[in-house]
Length: 373
Image (tube, rainbow, N blue to C red; front, side, top):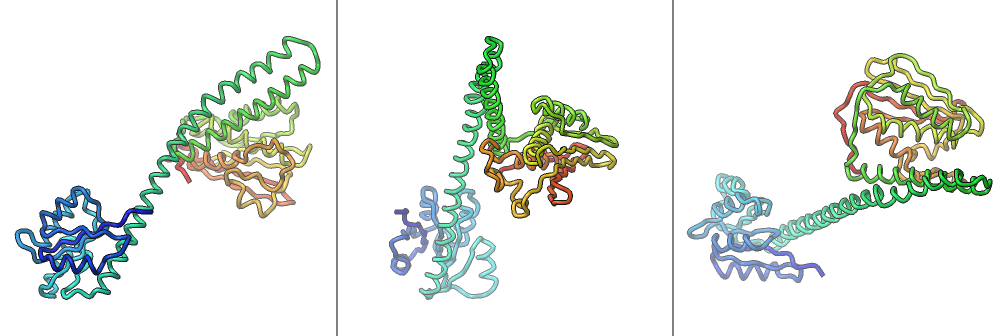
């Protein structure tokens, strides 16, 4: 059960306080009563209220002066104020009240239905504000857990994985038994795939928390791409990737992140393209401000899947390969490219196959991190 919502009523006449309390009485509202401006300020020091109903004509400190003091405090500045008055309805009088911070005027004798209606509005707004505050606190807690999750992935999982990989590499050196070699190769392959998944989860955690930072410097895109192509040739024991470069292909880029981008795209092309068909990587540096890269293969992506292709944990409709990963590769590609101030698009047709087009700014941009979605 939620706590009752507090409403402050300030009036120097006890009968008026009692009347307003009776009018607004209901289980989810508690009325805090003050017979003077000073007493109201004392209550506001220790109580949070959803709304203050203030009589204008009071001795020592009138309602306008009280409103100015409430508005002058950071803690109470956002409290909605409604003035209750039996005084004149002249525009200059109302203007002074609104200038003091009132959101509305009600003239005595008070219309009970009008008062209840206005109070209900501010009570609902107060409830929504408290709900948003609670959700914000939950979000902060989630971000804290996300940071802890990142720390666990970065240390507690990667460390034993490296031991497994090193052990798998050492096993074939200790024996010539063919079954041991095959088993060691499978262990190493699985450990490497798991390490890639850990890296993807780390990237996801950094992206969601806004902690992904770029380390940009001038680099040659062809050299970066060629390094990834050669690495994939060695691991796949085949040479299906053709690399073509033209123009000036040097620009400011986070080399580590970009190699990860190209590696993801080339791996996807090799895995999901038509078996045995070539994969192309083209780098165009003819534009003064942009470097354009295209990764193409003969595979075709279903038209219904294209709008979702860069969503996290999206793996498309093909579930035949249980080892295809977490579905984070293209998501991190889009975020890494976006962090550089670039764009990534995909086009897939039976005539031309699937082509991913990256447009990278040649010069360093102001985008230095990726915020949470």
